[in-house]
Amino acid sequence: MCGIVAYVGRKIAQPLLIEGLKRLEYRGYDSAGIAVIDQKGAMHIRRAVGRISVLEDALQRVPTLPDASLGMAHTRWATHGAPTEANAHPHTDDTGRIALVHNGIIENYAALKKFLTNKGHAFSSQTDTEVLAMLIGDLYADMQVKNQVLPGTSLLQQAVQAALHEVDGTYGIAVICKDEPDTLVVARKGSPLIIGVGQEEYIVASDASAIVEHTTQVVYLNDNEMAVLKPGSFRTTTINNITISPVISQLENKLEEYELGDYEHYMLKEIFEQPSAIRNCLRGRAEQKESRIVLGGIVDHTRELVRAKRFILTGQGTAWHAGLVGDYLMEDLAKVTTECTYASEFRYRNPLVEEGTVVVAISQSGETADTLAALREAKEKGALALGIVNVVGSTIARETDGGIYLHAGPEIGVASTKAFTCQCVVLTMLALFLGRRKFMSQSVCHEMIDGLCAVPEQIERVLEQSDHVKQIAREFCDRENWLFLGRGYHFPVALEGALKLKEISYIHSEGMPAAEMKHGPIALINEGMPVVFIATKGSQYDKVISNIEEVRARGGKIIVVATEGDTNIHKYSDHVIEVPHALEPLQPLLSVVPLQLLAYHCAVARDCNVDKPRNLAKSVTVE
Ligand code: G6P
Image (cartoon, rainbow, N blue to C red; front, top):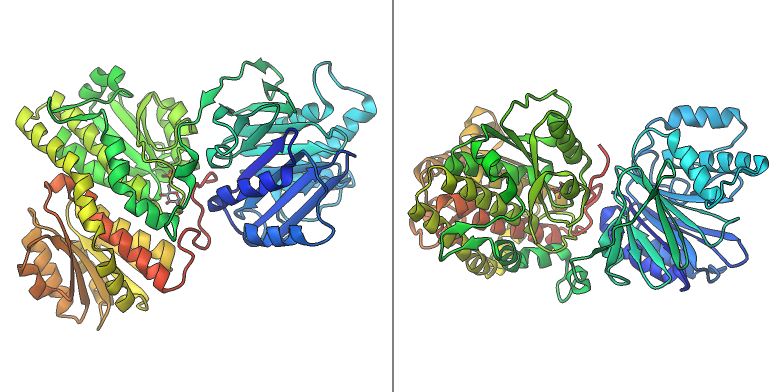
């Protein structure tokens, strides 16, 4: 969702903040803003509607901002109030003394606004954030009058603490005050904040991408924690002012991993990174010689996992689709009752979590609000909670009882690609880990591990067809309705193919089990409608061919993802994209790749902003 970056130190803050915002832009991009406090204690704010580049242009105009070593910036994904300049962050109190950037939602903002309005404060935006800025300002003024500064604290820190006690909802905030021109106060509850610790300087951001260029030493703030940062010193406390010793961690990812390199878009880069991402994901875990799966992050729970009666896989968006693949894998390979459920539904339906239930939260970012809430609900009800997460140190990763990291490297493109395939790889390893300890023979496990280790090279072969897929995309990119159909393991792939297309091309597309088409959606098929089938050689091949016939008979255009060397399929199709043969449980890892490419090339042909599709955010940290 929104991105926050803040700086206090000795350098000039503005270029650093803008650079940070650009790295965070994938989190939200409807408006952006910056606030700095100069040496004389004057606050300067600029805000602009649109991308960071629009803000950059605004900053070029005279009067430019003076040099300042304290400041913060924000890129917004609107929740309360339209994307206008007035609603863009930073927000200030009505004296202009306090400025604040915020990620999250203040749920009781209406009541607080009424209270503050009755006290005579005037608001200039429709946001919940301005209410928090005003509340801090109001409390600050009160405390100043009463001369209430506690020893060892700053008035700003105290005012922020007092305000946060009045607030319901979620926040990651950075606050500055022109009366304290060397102090940055940050706090979190439900929205991530990371403090980068440099040489007499601190850079705080909502994710590591804005920090890694400056330092790899970081402190992850936990919920209900805050920090007061001054050049050369910082103090972390709870919001009740209890001092906490900060734990300094090392960032895993390198700066190059966040760079676009020679690619035109992050999404394309990430599609092409899948072979190396999967190799990293498998490294040290899938041992071909011993036919063994080694999963250090869950090994301590082996007994509970092997005895578990039921697995619930949960996530949102693409992660949920990976969970659906996992559902098939777990029942097929580990022979354990499994269901995959949307985290947003799980958390509110008072789910049945009996003894022996394991809940697995799947999330690329590790910050998705609904997935995190589902995880907390599962823990509350006594389930063993595992995470399948990409971002190391993220909230979900830290709150689970154990888990398996993807090691896919940073994913910047809003449409998830390499995280999906790595999530499927991890779920395959989890199913094999359990299956082998239950009923699976060594030879079956051996065959599966060999198959898994061959996947990166097989994906490389699929990627060679990018130009062929581009031709198909060009032919059909102007069609406004598409269907994606598959059976068994390919049903979730059909969902994922449709999601990719709709999110970045704004084309209406639906994915469903091929057999379901006859129960309604077939009515949609008309002359020339593109219908994508995943029809690789496997147990349901003949059935899918029958479904293809049904669509052809009604004039649909047939695009098929088929097994290399399947000459038969050509007579049923308008276009064929070949993928190498693989064992059935591994086929999704290959068949999804042409669909990612198809969506990508359609979006480019339609001139859409591939990496920053309208209305979407990479990491959805609000419900
Ligand atoms: C957003 C993103 C999707 C992603 C989903 C879940 O909707 O646009 O690409 O699949 O969130 O994100 P997570 O980080 O939990 O995997």
